[in-house]
Image (tube, rainbow, N blue to C red; front, side):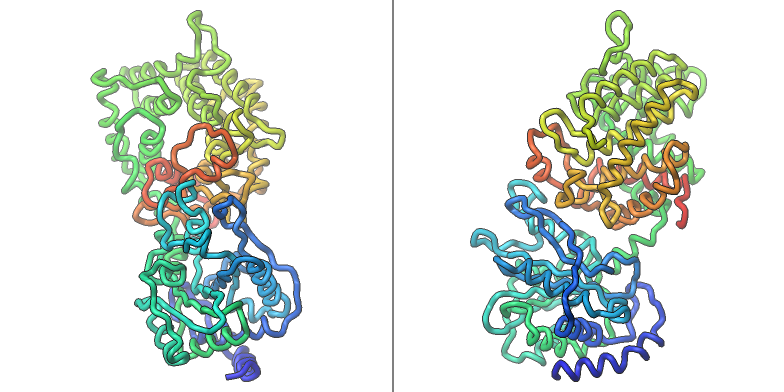
Length: 595
């Protein structure tokens, strides 16, 4: 079938198909063939003039250079029906420029009818680095020095982006094709075999991108059908032949990965909180911030749902510390933040039990005072890191609120002032430590959350409360400038090529809710910011408690490169799970508008 006949067929049937086709949820069967959709894409590429496409960094390669993907301007549109197709040009040299040209070609003349049926992304990246082929699924710690960063970046982006089909174009002179034979590609494999007899290459145990995508849960989300065209360039011939091979594949369904992302995005905050609570917040191996945040979030969730089981669980786990059978450490920032559990139990107790929980909290809070009883300029264990705004500040403010003793607020003020002077950059973001200027994502999340928790306790009428609110607003305004198109903040906040990081986005989103509810940030300005963040967060949380891209534990690092190459976790993670549960619970309490 030639190009002209494809164009006639597609254009003649388009109005009828569009007029009669209802809007269907993702995962249902489409009423129009994939041949028609991708045929339109091919026609557009072959006939249109050039306009600018938009591009986005989805990660870094082995040289820490940004990996750019060129996107249809409607790629991020919140629609379920259009198919999302990714072209991967597996060549070195000018592959990125050539792919960008193809996307501009697509953008120029594709009318609204075409763009409503399909979304296009194109990625020009060599899948062989230093004579070694990238392995998919990726091996080794994600983004770290010890494994190829580009393979993790590509793999995780495709899973989260709800991609329906990937076409990997190789660099051989002669046309050949290969497909992983599995359930996800059964129809495509049969069609290609019929169209290209004698041109099939054997699959290679799933090690290449096109072989691995259909045979695995990409980024823990779901499989994505893929075809490898081993022909140099993205030519008219290969596209036409591919489209002809796919002509018999009707009806069409979205990929398993796309259906899973859609399912995740339809969950309410209460549903996400319930799913996370099955896996996080059930143990207290030490009084430290990670298990305590999860346990505190479970308590709040159960109170919101009028059950109260988790409070009894928390009291049981904390009983050895109340009775004196165990002594909670106060010798680290994490341990100091862990003492927030005792302040939360004190709020929920009366009489002697309440006083005992307060005494336990004060054991850590009193480190803020010197031998003479005067408030220190900064609380011990701060390690010069922005984490300390959360690790110590909220405990001091909470103890001040419980005891109504001004000295705890004075100590908290001193601590926050000192840390902000040390770490605040001119643009309003915080460097993680004085070792380098990198604005680490979770370091800024800690700062946002810490300031918000302090504000929640600060006495109304205290003159420093307004200053604290101003500092928090300045920080949130600086963060707002770096939220990405999918609602996320990144491992290094102002470096969009660094990976989108879950825990920092959860902490920043929690802060937005607190600020809007308390009235110290503008709801009309920040509500859309929160909505985008929640959408990005939900995509990265599985119903089984698995998470996508949580930065591993991180002390202060000497360079930007060290933060860019910090390992990111895919799967269950106590730290990320605690922060996600905290946010989902807060959203359920607040009732996010539009849920």
